Length: 138
Image (cartoon, rainbow, N blue to C red):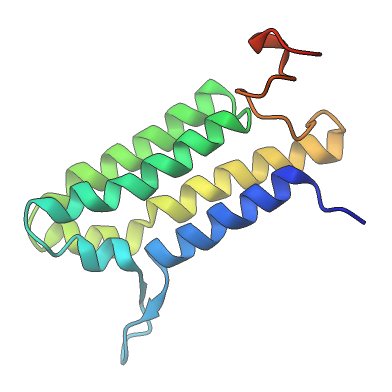
């Protein structure tokens, strides 16, 4: 049995979000942090570098047909993560708890699973040649 294409894409994004937000356990307190928190410690460039994978998750969500209001919610999560992340120490603590990438993959997962249950999600992304709004086959 072939796995649904959106589930494969979702799994890749899920792995990315785990690496960015929960890859490591902090000994003694059990808090999980990822590369986003670690890279964010580098003044200036850290938060900008950590925003690239977050932007990729939002872009892939768009390609997978996530509705605008949910894309906006993802964008707010990334914007909040980046904005608060620029505040020394407080931003790093916020980032370790907020986990914007995990939140955004959760939003996408909910959308994909609901579509599959309803039989409305075709596995074709918004940029696919088979997507009606692109002018390809419907």
